Image (tube, rainbow, N blue to C red; front, side, top):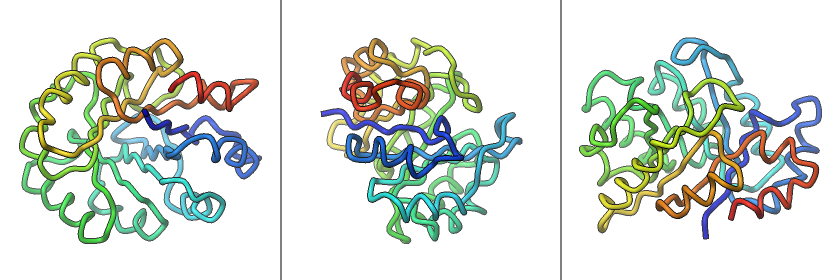
Length: 213
């Protein structure tokens, strides 16, 4: 069954524990978007809030670094309790540095993911697919919530499913996920769905989460 990862970017931070309590028993992951105002044109939050989040839920903490220097900050998020750290292919200049960061995360007992923007082709990930735990396909331009789903993401999901063979990485999709696009992503081969406003703005959050499965 597909795993659901509500994005805390859409939660009410004046009542964060209440919002997390309202969904944590109905989903497997909690998705944590980090934006630096440089790699993407918005700013979200850093590792201190992740540490607080780690104290109030036992869900798998899925940290998505939309930042320019993920290697520099990785240890901070490891220390804050990340279970998975996903960084952007576009944020690192060469393949060796990407391999080094993957190795570093694994040495520190954290799962490693790579994300690509809508305009980046899947084939750039070929050198890393044997080593990573997750590929995150952005189905919107990263940096802002509430955007519409970009359908070319479905082709990327299918391509990654074809490439998987005996590899073990999961395929995650983030952006514009609702009951309709969730089904499209599942049919294409997605394993994890990130949903922000669709879950946290719903009158019945449990029902919203179940509609994505």
